Amino acid sequence: SDGAGGVTLMVTSLGQFAEWNTARDRGLPEWAFDEMMETTTGADLDDRARRKSPADARRLISLFRVQALAWCHFLWSFEAGRYRPKLLACLGRELRGESGPDVFREVFGGDPDETVRAEFEAWVSGL
Image (cartoon, rainbow, N blue to C red; front, side, top):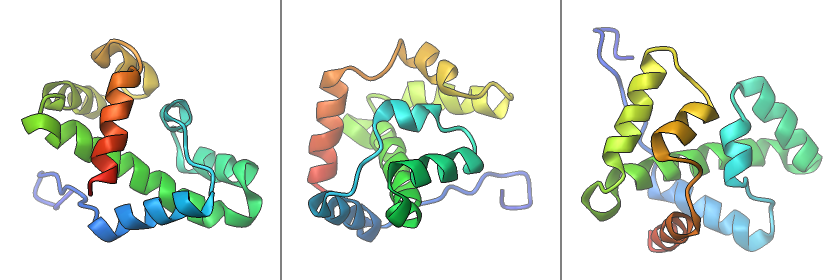
């Protein structure tokens, strides 16, 4: 928040997206969409990262955040905002205290299908 009742958006840099691609090239485990949706607290993220790869937990936490921001950026901007109304609906519900993966799935009609995931992957690769 900006202290005046407004919302400050966090903007990621292209360098962070590049870090994600570099990590992929190095073979670090990525976060599956289901894992991202089921991770709801910072403590949960810490636990999942440690279980996934204890030696790389810190980097995995950073990559989780970059991957989550990439999804948000994609849902906001892909094809002039094709998914933007649904993203805004999710954010509105979040602000009303309705949170979690079930809200996302309800608004989006389930998990993103393979087409959306392929669009996302192609979009990230083009950054």
